[in-house]
Image (cartoon, rainbow, N blue to C red):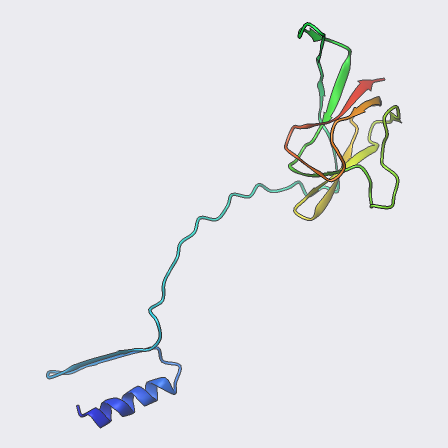
Length: 156
């Protein structure tokens, strides 16, 4: 194959979508590759746990043992409302609205106490039983983990 034939072949490949060309006969072998060789990078995808699809879900309550000055647990009869998912804790439905609950408020079973945002989905967290809010354990717009206490409550 002559140089002019090779130049013509290169021009045809350059003007087309062909990225690789190979030709072989008894006398010669031509291999033309256009562009950089493709590099394949393999990355492990992060594990994602599915968030519940319900708009509202009850929060689990767990007993709380306060500690005395001596460091010994004291059972004051209080429990906690815990986060059922990982996300961001919000006390209000919107920035200009009032908080769902305040310290001292009496809450009915099924009443919304806060929102947890997870993956751009706002989940209403409801009280499982009638109770009184003793303490709010998280700041507004703070991150929360699964099972983390949100409110200290006294069952009524």
